[in-house]
Length: 384
Image (cartoon, rainbow, N blue to C red; front, side, top):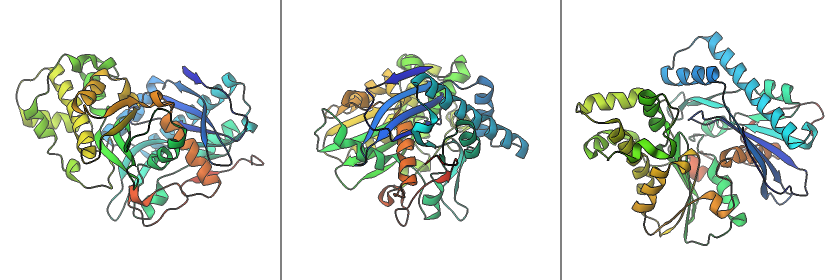
């Protein structure tokens, strides 16, 4: 279990955010304090590893998209109990009681995302009642559905949160300011210049993790070590970039239902040439980075602030820094914002927005018809 702690603020309006991303690295729990002026302050965070058996069940569900109703219900229950267990252990370690927490915001585990068409939806596995009952804390979930019901993508929701962080940041005073989260899927938030914009650029770690797991059995390519030994194969890269998603205009969002191991293996079959694993990994690094660079190349030079697991991949970071020589490519920690717990913080913030009847989406980002309260509240008696 990894923990981070900062100086505790004087206010006790605490919220907890829970996030388990596309990469299924672990369960991130973040404690934030939110002032009357809506200033969000990071208090503490911890990462709790997934039970290996549960992780494999979720991965299999995401990758095969086949299950039974019984299996789906059991995975949802196990996952929700794991979230509750993580929160309880976190509170114990921080010496904080459940009564001090206004609410938990839990994104749940995305297993399928289909934000367009007549049957648009986004499925996150989470049982809010199980979290609330086992932590004794009011729990907010289902953040995407309202935005999708209003014609939006339902994601990303974090750009509005990123915009609110600017006043708290240090060492940034640029004409352009872009947040880049490289989780399983990579997404950007263009905070400056206005108007606010944001979308999923494409795969982040999901293909890198999938391929390195296939060929080495490891969960991820530590420090980008295998990728650093290879060279980008531009013929394969061109084939990968033929995927129509890359040419779609924003607003847009995607997930593991598109970019997965089966998708990559099909492309490699079409390529039909010998290629080393290191070269495949190096090519996937470029596949991650190029859509990001294309998304910001129209902007004045500024700061690109990176968070998420990809920020720890030295090969990805070096590629971005080399390819964007006129940009300041930094991790968000360099400007005073925790990169490890950014998304968990965002869902604590979104829980606060929902509880206080404030909008949680930005139509400029998601394409929804209007801004609206996002989230469903499962209350605990007398919790607030």
